[in-house]
Image 1 (spheres, one colour):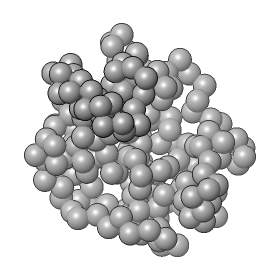
Image 2 (spheres, rainbow, N blue to C red):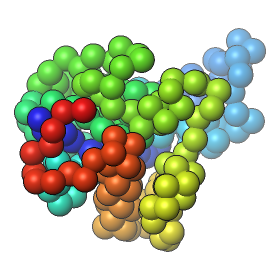
Image 3 (cartoon, rainbow, N blue to C red):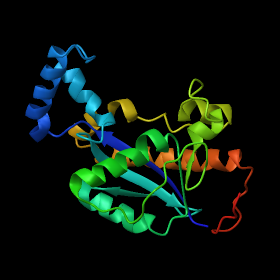
Length: 212
């Protein structure tokens, strides 16, 4: 059984997409749709939308192996990710269903990178996607917690203690602090792995994990 623990960091739309986004923003305003007060706020929120947002980095660890990070050209990142994912049995992460893996799949379509497999996003199960957020809440969508909250509850050192966090990734990227973004993402992956171990009561002996 090969498990991949993963996390991604994302960025708002690139400058080349700003004009089309301004048109979309204006149209939504005219149609009375719910939008932020300013275009700048609307643009910032595209980091949560795989249609226009971008991936800054993908950090991952296979079983007990050290955490690694893919960064640089987004299309190359995705190509390499799917090469690795081809041999993965189970993907483990926090909010994978609604964010990380969904974003990866959407960006793969946008950039023309064919996934090496067709992932099943069916709910109320933990294979091939083990989503820590939903497993913790037992799929109660009214009782979601954050990775930081869960780490503190389990006595696991949090990854939210550096200069870079999710809320300021875009600013760090503009400042050229790519290495710090990758380091933050890698910490999230390690926290994810430790939380998973606690949740499945595993001591993870050896590099090949047993099924649960």
